[in-house]
Amino acid sequence: MGVNGNDVDQTEVRREGGLTTGEVARRLGVAPTTVRSWDRRYGLGPTAHTGGRHRRWTAEDLARLERMCALTATGVPPAEAARLALGEAGPDAAPRKEEALPVPQPATRLGRRAGTGLRLGDVRQECRGVARAALRLDAAALDELLRAVIEEHGLVTAWTEVIMPTLQAAGRKWEISGERYVEVEHFLSWHVSGALRRHAPPRAAARSGATTVLACVPGENHTLPLEVLAAALAERGLPVRMFGGALPVESLVTAVRRTGPAAVGLWAQSRTTASRPLAQHVAAIEWGVRGARRRPLVLTLGPGWAGQTVSGSPHPPGLAEAVAAVESVVLR
Image (cartoon, rainbow, N blue to C red; front, side, top):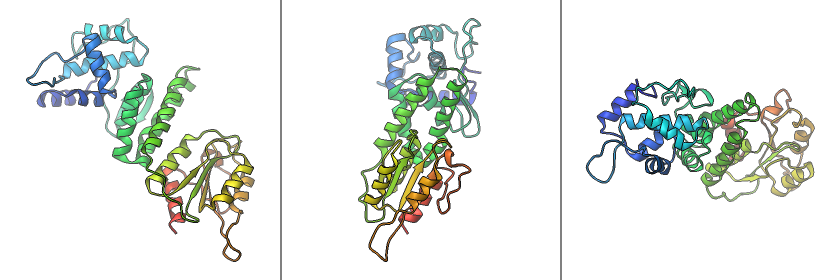
């Protein structure tokens, strides 16, 4: 059994005549430039050469690179990690006792366990690569992996089944490790935010009463879930006005009056920031000509609203439900 414990994958590698550098990078969750750099700097290149310009990586080569990833993810300097990876006899070699470092588990399919240093549980295979790139603080690899998963699955699935589980795992990691790994969560959040902005199509032109206003309630600065919702709505051609974190009450009311939205999403991460009177006040704002005045549908978003029922204001439990609720009122 190899370093990653995946005999089936190694058989496939041998049968296919080896992997390209790009295929290796995707399996490891790193950028192709990282693989080439490890080859050039530390001699972690493919052991066998084939005809033509493009080299192929064998199962043994892949095992060494997986070992390299496992070591660097736990803080071992790259040069030392490469020395240790090269010093092992091959894919069947066991870790040295003095290292006492975790080894990554098999690349997972849905329903199998992924081991990356973050406790992910039963998740999609893509979570493994995203988590490993975040642990290594590998910006190039993380951006590429996020781009690929969003383009392949769409924002709702990418967020629900890949990005959010990885963010939650990063949060649990630093919660049980003191102040360690805070940088991983911040790094991952920042790159997710960037990926959402790059993915969102040009803003749709808003027709009267068809836009959606999104804002965090006063005192609330957790904007990433709202950024995801904004991007998912834009992906569907629905115009959005995003106001971000901790919008003052007066500014929120002004924004609603100026834009005349069909829906207003108010995010509260904590029960201490969720305000039923605020939601009721926004829901009562009217605009338009006399006799045909309109009011917005207010969506109470986030865990802070749990247990605080606001009459007439839906509380979608997830991203897909929030998108559906906005679509239903905007396209009505």
